[in-house]
Image (tube, rainbow, N blue to C red):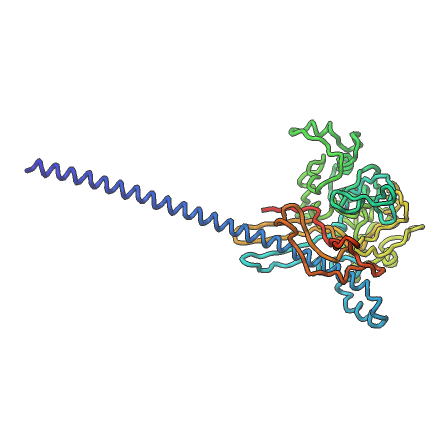
Length: 454
């Protein structure tokens, strides 16, 4: 009897251990399932937030394009009011005076950008910068070919050759083959680095980076220097593709590139560009103070240009070279070319047959533009913990028939379209700005570069 009781108690102990083991295994399975379910849920949520953020960022870029298009339409409208009659034309011009005009300034609606606003489950924000208000690195060296009155390189039979982007060769989005130093712009860049407290001037190294030869300047660097670094590479000997490429140039440290925040220094991306006015002219209405001050020094005898220009443009945007001279922004130069407002083209100067090798004189005679073609649009989208920033560099042409942006994989095909605005697409002679005979309207925008940061 006692033995049977002992055996029964032993069986009960084994059963209890098996039950406990089963409970432990079941708990592990439940916990593992809950964990995997939580991870999957978090992943889906993150993917959803990422998607919402990217859609918001693209929408922000589209909003920036719409602002630039509206500004162009106002410019076109104010320049085509001749048929309204004297008094009526003046009245409409006064009504639109604060909104449009044949210039681009920091008081235009596009310069205000788009503040944070809700879109679906995300928020978007857009900021627009004028690339013509910066120092163009790719204009430091220019070729010595002939240029026509519009600043376009002329090919055989007087035709304007096309580049890979389908734009006329020699337009502002195309880098030129470097040959001759643009001395005024070179001195401007030197003055900029001196003002920022840079001890070893990297300007010679920048010139060596983009020139076509392998000869080093006194403070420059070519392949022999770069091949001796810890990670060897070669000098590019070609135009810059981005301002960030400066970080590969001798003497450009992260401290120089990003600036000293304690001294309120802007990053070089806000002062320099690779897509500015191809001759090195600067939009006096949008250029930062640092750029204007350095440019005044580069022009020679124009110290204090920044203070005067900012004071004047805050009152009324500057519209012509005569206007700039009358306000004391720059001294009159004997034999100066006609100013013009430049319209959407940026006010290129010079006469037919201008030699690009004489650009220092041309720049001295006509250093400013007053309207711009190339803009940087930064679109930001945020949803939850996800954020996406899209940086688009856009070329704004004169075509008003349709506006769209397309660049590789920007959401597939052309991603942005606005209402047909061909009624405003006319030049100063009243001719339609479209591809006559082809049935296709000229595009207002071309995407020159598109970067996505997640």
